[in-house]
Length: 464
Image (tube, helix red, strand yellow):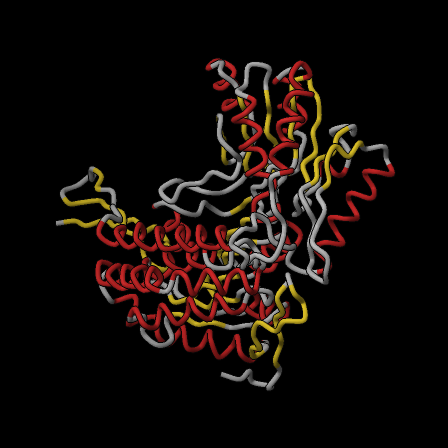
């Protein structure tokens, strides 16, 4: 469908920028207004459909996505660049969450409480109305699914504004919901950029905004939404430290840190691009991590032998390269930097640096690229002290065989996701997901917790 003003935009393959992936209508404020109007009109009938019946439709979407899984994974790699194995894993997670959340249609509980007079006191949850979803390019199947499925199950109608860098996968998701039986107007897709996002946040009929992206943009969205008392849920940036103690299983730790720091080319909010290592094992751990980095093949994501694809666009590569140039100028030691394929793709290979204080920008700021900074420490308390000074608080990990140290870590580390002997990137569909400080605001996603944001809690007093 063309946009109201006829504008269009192109998306090219980041591994081969000359290759056109898709051409889409560029939506703006008028297109958002039309989508919101359709969602508002469709809301009463969708709200009144019993929740188990909505769950049946969500379950059907999961089966359709499973049938189209390879098509969706190929499209994801083509437009976003990540290795095909990573795309398949992402699609699998989205299917799993559709299956999980559909079951919540028969499990959403209310509380029954004693009444002071003859009667009954209980709680109930009701949908909000029209909700806006603004999603990023780095997980363009999983994140729109994690937001849209609970929103729909709760009885809301949805307007999704995906990143303009990943339009194709969003279009396929819309097709899946339509085929599953989601009625017209209940799920609406507006392809666009900043103008469309701003219009969605500002629209008076949008009762809530859920956003995943940078802290800077999230802060602005929160301010705009708060001005009109709209609910706001933000999943934002991260600088996720790992701590390697002297009693750690170094082989396991090195494999996990490489996975957490280099998967998806480091373009994930829970990537562990900062590692505090006990001095006594620093050299041994660094050597093992470099061995893991050397084994990573960089190239076109549709090549089945490739482990790491390109960064998503030239500005992303330039930004990460700028951090590396600054680090070198400030005396960093580059322990390893992989060669990348020749050509015009936006490639940057796995890189390991050290020799800089924990206060340096490369150790404090989100890079969104395949770079891991190693910092030697004298113990866990020093590492946690540095980590808790970070403005972010999404994920962290510790590697130790000492249960007391593991418990101390879990009690004092300021992050929403705590990992003991596993990567910072671990998250499971039945568990809550979200961060502290500048990493998260407004409630958790995933698990049954993902429904809470999309509902209002009511107290009911019945007397007889």
